Amino acid sequence: MLQPIGYGLLPLVRTPWQGFAVMVVEGAGSACFWPSQSTLVSGLTPATRRHAAFAQQRLTMNLGPRPRRPRRRPDCARARPAFVHGAFTLDGLTFIAYVFVLGLVRDPVVQRDEEAAPATYAAVAPHKTFAGLWTLNFLFVMAGYSLFVLLPQFARDHSHVSERELGLVFAVNTGTIVIVQLPLSRWIEGRRRMRALALMPLLWAVAWLVVDATGAWLEATAAFVAFAVAAGIFGAGECFHGPAHQALVADIGPPHLRGRYFAVHSLSWGLAGTVGPALGGFILASEPFALWPAAAAVCVVSAFGALALERFIPPRLRRIPREEASIPALPEPAPV
Image (cartoon, rainbow, N blue to C red):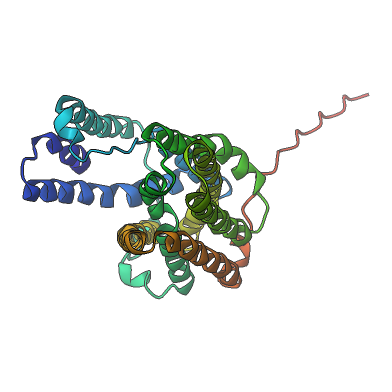
């Protein structure tokens, strides 16, 4: 309930300290929401279908938010306050609706030995394989997800792409995920997990190099098309994360520590989501055409890191499970 309170109070913010306080409330709710939801999804899903469950989670995450259209004027909230206030209020109500839907979801079955086992963060820290996954995700978010928010400024300043076209670029990214996510999750079943995961940052590296080249050589409509292609490539790469990475976090440790694993793992999102835009914004302001090759280089390094980590993954988890179709039993022959 912290998130609806945070978003619901945003229309009442009048001073900076009030905005910071409201965002602290929302951030606390977000910190509780994501680890608990991932743990719930893992507990409700058989191990052989966990990758498909996280693929579906990624799909619904992108179906929910609409592509945001960047604004030239920072005071758009003053120009249309009723619209902005209504949007925040509606956002808060969606979380309340989620609470009611959650009441219809059954709790996962917990074994008695799991209830008795201690669930502490100290048991998570020594897990070297999980530490490797955490580090990889930090790199994924810092050089990938978080830098996508800097694309509008770069495209507008260097290629003169309009705000409407930028909105369509984000729509291409979202549409690619919606279309590709489930078929891709099915396609990688039975394949080596870390090789599939390595494809994600490699695709992102290609996307960032396309962005850099577009900003240097193209303008207007041609640049819009190229940025849309880059957004589509980036979106295709995103589709590997849920089934290959998130599902592995759910399986890497004992069931009674799954919530702790997801809680610690969520820190990689928060920290990298802060470091990436801050460092990227600094580079963008000083050497804009150095940002995207640098991000591409980090993505390539993380791809090799994923391949190197494979030998530390338990053999039973190295391949993404494939749910074999059951063969119907033949009827018994009739007695003669």
